[in-house]
Image 1 (spheres, rainbow, N blue to C red):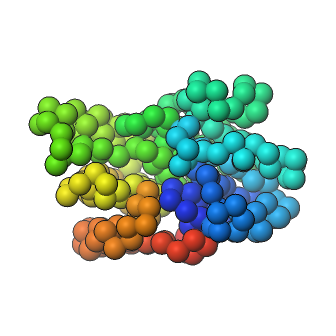
Image 2 (spheres, rainbow, N blue to C red):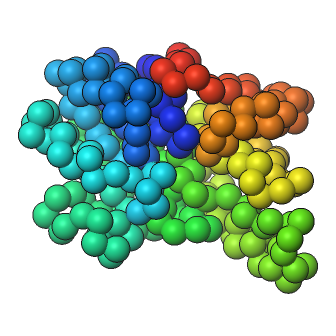
Length: 238
């Protein structure tokens, strides 16, 4: 099973029987690249997941692919429907707590501290988590103490719910966004402190690779493999 970084929070997870694409909004070369040249050319089924309607996590372009590839299943957060970015007949829409399961894939929607959902998948006996915009968005350097406490409380509530349902994650794709400020890795720290994470894959860091990489020692001290994929098209075996 291979995990490939596309850009930002977009990854492709490929097995011999099917592929999963998370939070696509641009390809490795902008409008062309790994998704168009490789993923859409595979004969196996493709599942397209989008965690919320923000333009760096969802593009209506994905819905055009069904004219090129018939065996695509769209699993989108319900807020995409609410914000009229997609119509009711174009996809299956999930809210927190809802499930999708077929012969290949199990997907459960968990919460977010922004909009939309996060996704937990069971793939070949492994638990794969894509956080979407679930994070401790505290913005400590510019927010009030009350705002910081609220942001952290909301995040820890969602984290508790996730842990109760699935205390072990084989792969966690999770935001490390330096735009938050000096304590930008706090949410990631809380994730690996509270759940058993085997492989931590940072995302949502835009071009600030060095700052995302700085979380590596913290993760590895806790026995977590830190897998920074920063070049478009870069892959790891899971």
